Amino acid sequence: MRILVAVAEVAVVDGEFDIEGQTVPDRFLRHECNEWDQYALAEAVRIANEVADVEVVTVTIGPERAEETIDRALAAGADRAIRIWDDALAAKDLLDPATKADLIARVAREEGPDLVLAGAQSAGEGFGATGVTLAERLGFEWAAAVDDLDLNADAGVAHVRRELEDGVRELTDVRLPAVLTVQTGITELPTGVPDTGEARDGDRAVLNLDDLGLRVAVDGHFEQQSLTVPEAERETTLFEGAPAETAAELAAVLCEAGVDR
Amino acid sequence: MTVLAVAEHRRGELRDVSFELITAGRELAREIGGDLRVAVVNGPVEDYARTLSREAVDVVHTVDHGAEFNHDVYVQAVAELTEAVDPTVLLLPHTADGMDYAPAVASRLGRPLLTDAVDLAFDDRLAVTRERYGATAEATIEVNADRAAVTLRPTEWPPAEYRGDARIEPFAVDVDEAAVQSNVNGYEEVRGDVDLEGAGVVVAVGRGVGAEEDLDPIFELADALDAVVGAARPVIDAGWLGPERQVGTAGTTVDPEVYLALGISGAPRHVAGVKGAETVVAVNEDPAAPIFDVADYGVVGDLFEVVPALLAQFR
Image (cartoon, rainbow over all chains, first blue to last red; front, side):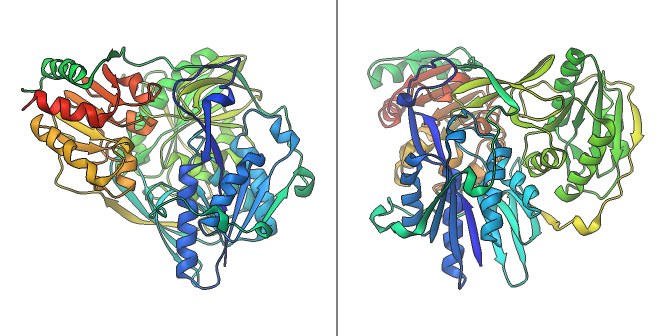
């Protein structure tokens, strides 16, 4: 059985930042493996440890910098890693889910996975749509926001629990092959930083658009008009100073708001 | 020119997001200069349709096929209805179920999809405002297409309240049962003896706590404040506290007099669950943490210094 895992590197703002033009400059960003995808990979590795003859292959869309994320994925238990990148992609500020799904679908058709796991969303853009779009492109079944998975590969069924709202979970059976988008917490993440020295050089491939036989329109459907800091919903009074001082101010606020001292 | 909004229901009840979509759809239809239609799929659709008949809704389309949500049925029904109605904008909920079918519908129809919208505008083109960079920045994105699909973040629009006189039109979908390859078997509910919903004061802890063994002072503080301890998702994921303590749309939505957020960054689904709090106080080391956007009072600092000092104030 082959499990394909979509592993993205995301850009998140690290502390205070400025917006320049219509972007947040790199110096304010931290690039890291998307947390949801870390759980997707951990779940794939868990299955591989429990079921015989499972190969875990990761697919990442990203520049050379993303090799660090791939090192960690390989060290965490992936057998092979595929990275997709191209100058045409580098020219795009925003890769939308449909574009990402098209790219990953090309790899999936080559790899023929029984199961595709992806994070339910990314910490950077938070579209939350790539996995289900991918499933539709491939003609696979799917389930979104999965927080528990019991795979019955012999029967060709994934018994999944989907996290809905208000503490409600849905229990669903999904036919394989399927794309499952997973929630954080679906399994335990390995503790500690994986030893990236364990990552094997020969287990990775880099593909460009020609390799995939794809063209990505640089002028897509979306054009960003502005990028701003969101307006605060409430006006915040910030207390500054030594902990004892700020605590005294906070205590006064809490008492004012109804806490008994 | 039409706006079509798809309602959401679960276990016999229309969810609030359905009426929020109507509000957003009404504003958008006005800007587009078109009509507003609402669709409801599965369940007691006639009853739902009457409830969804709110001010400015012109038509409610009902699709009667099964009792509950099934994404395979929804994809077929919503895609067919969308092709028939041909709305300029298709509005869908950015919920767990919404995200279980919206991307597939958009993909099937070849419509550009923007998700998790917090604002919409239309002036020749649809402009969608959504967050980027981990919810620290807000982008307005124009859609260069005549037709689009958008999912809307719950709680961003007020729910439509006033009754209307929409026309109710059943829409027959010949569901391809062979294409229904998923089967919903039932539901589970997170249960526990923690009353977050009825709490007057909630002390909530997030990733900033760092380790399970560091939760003790949080519980001490909660005890001193006569508060209930809640948690953001990372604390639940790590297994440091049980899921019955999760605050946010996936867990419990709270509306206490005081919500004290300790080491919580303020992910959108967490923030949406605390909007009803009268007073929000946040302590976080990161001055750019989104939690400060919804806080009345804040301290940029180390919670392990602030919490003991605050505890001393209440002893």
